[in-house]
Image (cartoon, rainbow, N blue to C red; front, side):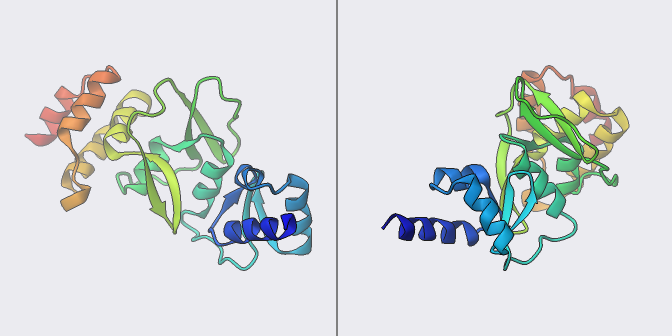
Length: 197
């Protein structure tokens, strides 16, 4: 009976585009068993703690690395340049994947990973579908406020202009933007006046 439950749990994981060793452990699948399945070719190890069914198609070139990066960082949220790229609010191609984490979390930046520590990690955090995978990311408004706080003014102003020009449901919520600016202590008013007049 336990073997059948284990097989059912593994089947659930294999239906997902990606899964983590933490998700597997919560379903009763030991990390050593994941190694065994990887050696047998049933699953692919994409990065530390991130797996995929060997029958799953590879993730799209554009976002595959970003999805793997956010899955590899426990509690991580796509932020700053990476979020601007997802929302098409920058012409820059990020050289690193920007992932926000809580202060005190033990993740470190690497050659392709830029870790940013935030005191208020949950403000503006949403989940979107990217290549069929749900990923945590900051909404447009929080991303723009963080750009003013932590990136160059040129990048932030360009993102603000581009977001105001986006159509329909992608349009920027100015009330939410100003609320975030107040909460994160960023004076956004001069920039809003500049880009809207």
